[in-house]
Length: 243
Image (cartoon, rainbow, N blue to C red; front, side):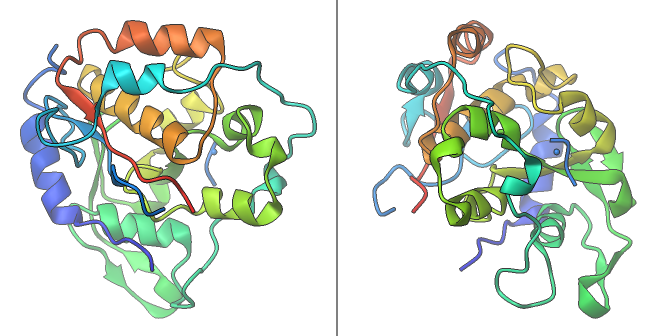
């Protein structure tokens, strides 16, 4: 069953949290605990999650638990990851499902899940968007990066599941097309969201996605994550391994 996020609650926390600092591929880029959402308690963007006392791994510890290997880009094609499918046959593709779940103001839903109106807050750059066509759905860990980090050995079915992952809140996020296309297929050693308030949330979301899908990282990526995560002392990572 698809996990529908509570968009209005998420947005309310997001807007409130943006007032504080972070304790300082392009689109269109299972049973064990901890669970599928990821966040930091001082996370300014307000993505779901809790404090270290409540659950999850401290961010630094979570990063350290990801294996380090050399990346493998050979053979990558974006079409290797079938995405924006209508998994449950309700006429809403994965893209539409994320837009509906993350809306601050719910859009009107027409025939074949066409969306009009509504508003969204892109946490990468703290920009409010009122036209869904100006939003991209970002794969938190880009498809090419996933391929490099282990997905090259997956079946087509598992790659499709990854590309349409609605089972974890932060695997896919609605953000401005500008920031998503600036990110492209780069990892945190090469790109971070422009909004300072997004830093801890982004690091937690990235780490949780890697852990959820048992993806590795390279040396430069791990070093960058550990360095960037130093101010995020209260941030914790919660995830559920993908089936």
